[in-house]
Image 1 (tube, helix red, strand yellow):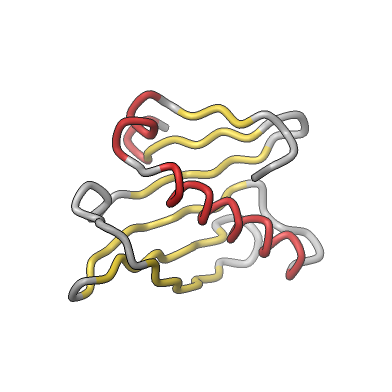
Image 2 (cartoon, rainbow, N blue to C red):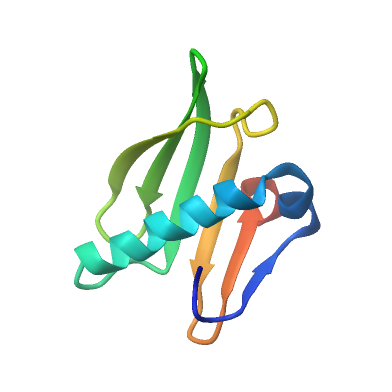
Length: 100
């Protein structure tokens, strides 16, 4: 989990399982170690493939990059959702693309 406070919207809390959000935070933290200047925005797109949840991660501002992760989980609530993870100097914010 991140070391700064994390703010999520009500819809995120209702629709996304906490372990999936924690998995996404792990991906964000891994990106910070891989890139010298990681972007403040990570975009996660959730898609279905057979019985798997596919998480596509886009680093939007600093070079656009796509990463693919699979996560075996009940995912009926995640399909075709896009989640934004913002990093601010003193906090993080997580919200759906329609809430931006």
